[in-house]
Image (cartoon, rainbow, N blue to C red; front, side):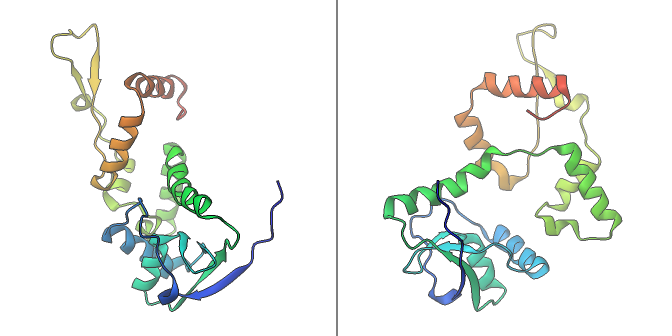
Length: 196
């Protein structure tokens, strides 16, 4: 596969055209987080656009850039992409990231060290409630229960709480994953101490 050198150009935010059928939605809370990130770290990831300034990748970042008053943003122009390739990448860019997962032990270490440095940890995108949960997990008997009619020796259930903004992602995950797969991943994690 031949890779072309990437050329970064700057485009006015007002000239960029979001894809009208972008299936990945960005609510105000996420745009606010992205805006705070841009203020702290700068605009570090260029948008992908086509030859007519149509946005392929970076819809949320574009909205956040407008929110903080940026007049122009860095872009990479994918000038030779046909329509089907652009539309497929819009989906792929959003979907492929969902297959990654956190190493919560390392995440906890990173967040603790940021706290020691007096860095505002909410700029990482994590809500303070999520950070608090990582620091003082409340895993106790309230998370375990017998399944009615099965008896304690047969099976038990575990319940978890997630931030409301992850509700749709969790629904999507549960819809596309069998119960057995979820059970097996949790069992593997429990036995090995490593996230599967």
